[in-house]
Length: 205
Image: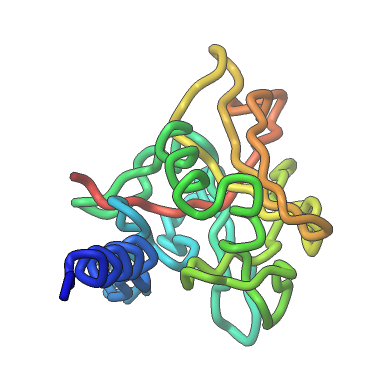
């Protein structure tokens, strides 16, 4: 009796199951303020599974969307975003975001990473527990915030500059399964106006 083909089949199934293993979920505590964040490992990367809400106590650096006295997300200037993540974590580069998208399904990464339910949910399936919500961004001027595209997109900073005054942002769309990169996001204050986006931190390697 030749059992070799059966062994090959079993091994193939084992490798296939490993390739589609469930993401590793955990948590981390920000030592600066005691806030506990959900985390998830997708491929070789470990990400915060929630938007950062660290408060710089400086309106020019950070603002917040508050619901029932609880911050749902922070919005940060680009300069602040680069320093916002706790020790052992950092603001992801465009390349690190792109690696996440490829790991999460390429053309359908948006659907797989967006939230499935809840306030400002992303109309996704949240396959990995990454839980992207459509919190949009904030434009700060004259001491107040105007929220932009809330309920329509999620907008995150990357650490990668496009020019001396613009940087790459990462978009998830509420009306389709795609994602996008925008290299023209203003990263410097302009006549008192500051663009602020959400931050997801990624663990250092």
